[in-house]
Length: 340
Image (tube, rainbow, N blue to C red):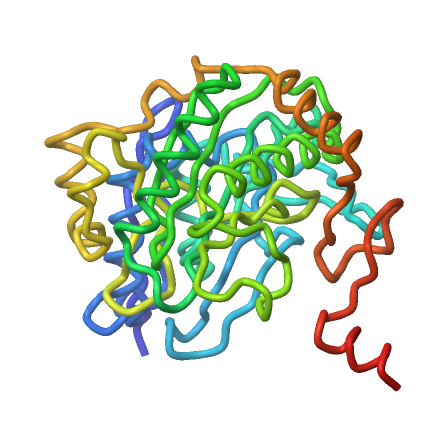
């Protein structure tokens, strides 16, 4: 039986590369094939690389499309093209292994050939995988909150970052929330950057106590928007800007301009629509790499909080117990244990 594979021409640094797409007719979402996804990746390529380029990347893969099994590839898949490269990363456990680096669009298209839907880059560059070069704050709405509520929180967060001499950039999550980023000089290790993010999250909570929360345990969040301070930890990643998401309708995590945020509708940004939007409106994050700030003001806020008795917050569950970290016990279980 003849193969249905097709070759896709992808612009490269020295002319076009040809990337083989096997099973191009496979539906990754209903009505959207692997070929469609590969074509989207080419169309969004330069903007996509702004978030992916020169970073270790974890691939979220769906061999049978979004309705089937999924898994995350941290080790590079076998058969990576000769023009791709890897970088060694250290994980919370202390172990090390290489991860794929996507330096050009053809490598991203090859990842789609390997059934990747979502790209999850680390917040570091390959020259120094221990020092983040960007803040990432996920505004995660709890049930009961509207998108207008999330926009209010994002705008307040943007104002706070500007007060700290950081330049904020916002994108949709591709689901219900918003992600706020800021480039920083890679002068500090993960733990220091985490402390700066915690200080920012706590200050936002003080300003909007009825709207946002830093409570790690879901049972303590109520209907508030969780300011996720853990997304800047080692081996914690967020879907890249312009990355598709494995949700109905093939949504894309879409950068938007602050002045347009009130008009955003999540369903506007899909694998089908984003290429034309990029052509007509350009990349809302085009200047992000030139807007690099420093964390000293945020770390001064962290130290002020420490001086008033506030310290570490919980780390992700896969982390070893960290110095100064509170007990990783759900509050309701802690209360039960204390009553026994």
